[in-house]
Amino acid sequence: MKKPLSGFSLIELLVVIAIIAILAGMLMPTLAGAQRKAKSIQCLGNLRQISLATVMYAEDNGGCLPRSTHSAGAYGQSPWGYAISGYLSRQTLAPSDPMWTNLLRSIYRCPLEQARTNEWSYGKNVYPELSPSETGGPTWTRLEQIPRPTATILYAEKMGGSMADHFMANFWSEGGQPEVDQNRHRPKSNYALCDSHVESLEFKRTYDPERNIDNWNPATAR
Image (cartoon, rainbow, N blue to C red; front, side, top):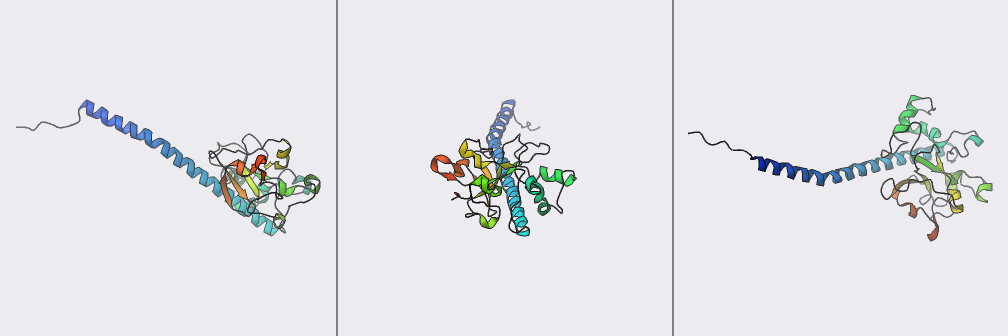
């Protein structure tokens, strides 16, 4: 006599499918959060490479930091993105070089940003390249001139939709709007400081006039 065949009933099968769906729904936010965290860490790695390349550039140029498009042209120099490219690749790159496109899509772009042509995610603090007339006296064009490099912001994540490669932080106290993407990594953003270390911080820890915090200005960075 044959034994009766065993198996799932339709109800049991539906219950199993429902359980799998519930578990998947519980795991998806966790997986998405882990993926976002991994991209945030990759972004910190990008900024770390940029800041180390900047230090190497300074060591090869009498301690002088590269300039942004705010002032590079006036001094006959290449903006920082091009100036340090030789320390991030095998050679200093021009915009027409195919390797420049690769740099824009990798080290110069936060992986949480959608790909955009000829635009990068990071900008340089303009304070270290300001002239005496712009600062009212002191200048910080060389690394050794920055009083507290461990506290002074050098690079940060800029808001999308702008071709600018710098932050006009000297105008913020006069009512200018910070160009920083303050919430890219919810609720933080990534920063590189003048001693080449990187941190993920809330913007108010770098700039908060109500608490007299301005770590963009080398004269007030704490």
